[in-house]
Image 1 (cartoon, rainbow, N blue to C red):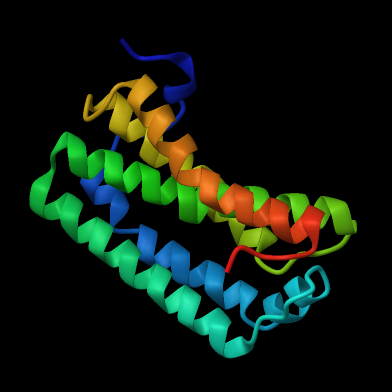
Image 2 (image 1 turned 90 degrees about the vertical axis):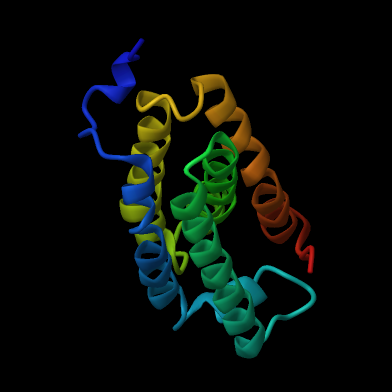
Amino acid sequence: MTTSWLSPLPSRPFHGLLLAAPLIFVAHVVEEAPGFVTWVNAHIDRDITQEMFWTVNLTGLGITLLVVLFEWASRSKVSAIVALAWLGFVMVGNAVLHTTGALIDRAYAPGVITALLLYVPFSAWVIASAVRTRRVSAFAATIAVVLGALPMLAHGYMILFRSTRLF
């Protein structure tokens, strides 16, 4: 059964869509890189460094590549759930962090453009594909994305509302 919110999205294989995830991740980091460290340090009491920014983001890119490879090698329900949880963390949760930051600051938050223009539609498309192709149920996809997003949401909450960070 196809739900109406899935209808506007073109049908693509789940594993094929995931190939774009590393490229979208890199586009987001390119937008963030010039100003994210300064922006986040204006919000927290324990500053981060540019080196930490690159370490975190290169690690995230590496994990993204491993998740895509796992899906391509397995094409199982487990690999789909892992991919959805990771996208929940790195894209959905991240989009909420950047958007909330921009709203709180009433100004540009480095990363908000790619978060809104790339992360949100791409995540919706991937989730819809996973459900439409019956890789996972809508319930399982929702749980995976929400649970995946929770650490990023907690981290964003700490930065924006508690002036500290998780790591």
